[in-house]
Image (tube, rainbow, N blue to C red):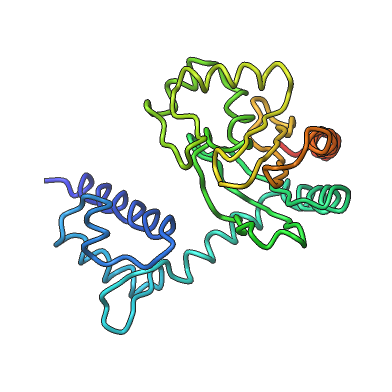
Length: 255
């Protein structure tokens, strides 16, 4: 009997375990991991022992709870280091924050999620969580909505679950409502969400048009209570700096 199917299953389980640990704010016990992954306790126990030995997972002295280990960080850093667009995006975030004083993000769509690759925080906004390496459902963020709008409605429906997961009471959880919102995003050229992903925050995002369809976007997070004139000013700044970044990346031949 070939061992290949079992090896593939082990590889998939290893990745799912690491993803579960990375998405959790706290360490997880073996029982919690079993609940989240659905894997048999016997194989889970063996995989965890191996991951701890290889420093991909850390455990407490009693070996009762597990968290992501230092080698996972090395891999994530390597991904950032090899991205030729990132240094230009980081410079754009610096310029954007200097102009409008709000937190700016650069993110990439990862299937039905967005992955945050760079953040420049507002010096006044101590309530904003640093998001580099974090992954959020695309439909609850302006970043994700502006990148989903690059796809057709059929592609969006095929990509996203129905019903959609809600993170706050303002999250869009109806797929038809989301496709209607994406149509508006396509018409105006930018996305805006208010408290759909994080209570108390609003966000505006613009796609970086150096790939077709665009995979990356720039956003600005702001207090949800800002007036329309301030939001309009911030939106214009995000559009200006994102267009400049896209032109730079195209000129540099980065794809």
